[in-house]
Image (cartoon, rainbow, N blue to C red):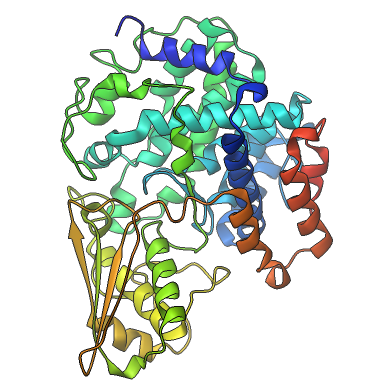
Length: 466
């Protein structure tokens, strides 16, 4: 490596604009944007969402500031981004990359605030999102399991960098300033796994705070503070701190070898787009449960079977999906049979034929919602097995029936990497059940789909205000 990682990344950020984005990348960013804006509407009815909005309005109100979604009040850049990030994360339906980072709630609120305050166009928004999603995804990559094993939660760790990149792009930072923004974000980031491990809920505010920290990193970079050139790969830099070394030695991996070259972060940058593997989570649960729900829905749709005759259901998954948040710090209530476990979502979907995306979010250890005796009984027959040779988001489900019949389905890991057409088709089916004017939902969809033609974000944001 002749140049630092942050130098190569910064040059990519500065030089990438809407006109040199591949069509499929633009489509993918529209998918993530529409998904996150819709989820912000869902999140506005949660206690977490309401609390974040109220905090921003009380502590950071600003008449000429950025818009808080749904509520419509104005706040400082940081205040609005904090509240909007919380709205996009409150129902656990944010997007996901490699299971454990959620770029949308960190990048998109930063982009919305920056574009609104900077009078940026739809093309500016799409290009800022694209470089931020790509950089965050590449920085995270194979390092995610090892970061988790250090006791850190990957989503805010890498999300701070995503927010900084997005903000810096919209601010028009030059290359040296962007290197500084990356350096500052590398030192501003944080978030531990003790909450996910023990049942604490502090993680509910990880992404909102990461968004604020990233914003501040980019804003401070305009002051021409010199950031360390090797903030990422240096001997005392980002990877050494959060992975445990700067040599690419991994303590845990999804699958494959336990060593990776740091050069992989920048290989084919701008040619191969890692952001294409981002998954929009349709269901209010941990990301690894979503493909299980989808696959079971497909199996039940394809086969007429009597639930009463099921003898055994086996779910084969990636091993890290069965030891959340990390094999180093597993949370038994997440992985043992019970409400909100993979066993639960498997059984619920098998009995009901689907799982409702607009259902209230439930957490491990909570009582079931409503009368679910049949679900709780069937989950006792569900076995969840982790494998080191299976990709994440690639479950195999086998249903064994009394009498010998066997029904099986399997994913390869890419099935939920939806494009804009698939995302809109799935969410349009929910329009009638969402407490939001149908004309605004339709307007939001149409405006997102044609965002490159928008001179500002006023129309888009208007459809997201009650």
